[in-house]
Amino acid sequence: MNDATELWIIRHCQSYGNVRLPNEPEHLRDDYPLTPKGLRQAVALASRFEKGDVDAIYASTLQRTVQTIYPTAVKLDMRIKLVAELMEFTTKIPMTDPEPIARDYPRAFFRDLDGIDIANETEEDAVRRADKIYTEILAENEGARRIVIVTHGGFIGYLVRRALGLSLPEPFYWELENGGITAIELRRNDRPMLLFSNDRGHLRPDLL
Image 1 (cartoon, rainbow, N blue to C red):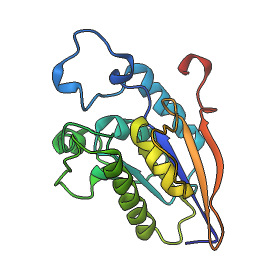
Image 2: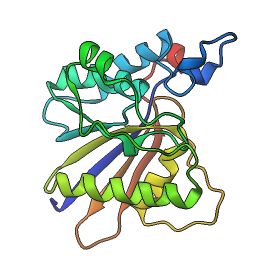
Image 3: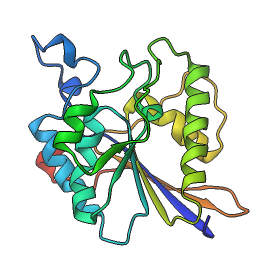
């Protein structure tokens, strides 16, 4: 690790699961795509980054996170590593279908194709999952200056707490809006520092 590594944790942009449209197809309920507004938010998110800003990009294996960070990956000429451990809390499917992801988002690649069963996970399970993926991401990116992680509203709290070294009573929810960024500076031989949380300065008023 450098003297400091910035971890940027982003909640996916607006998906159909956030607006709850009537008569939505049943198969979408655990793998909602972004809405047209969410897709515009994703394009706006890319404005936060320039080439050289980011050393690694991670996202869950659900399509809404891939869609969220894809314009950024294109702009930065980077690939996105998809990991099932970043999926939403108690997701009922093990992962999204890899074939349309490979077809439509060629910059995204799956770290593995096994998926995970978290449909019935408990709070304790989610804490362990956050610890596992946090530890693995840092180990894979020793010396990185900035790592971007795109995940979900129900799981972000566990990941942020792990990065900040917090042990808080349940229930605790780290509130982020769609497209919101939380940045944490991980400092060698010092305590982590929360730089900002739920920052959506990249979004115009019509995209909030």
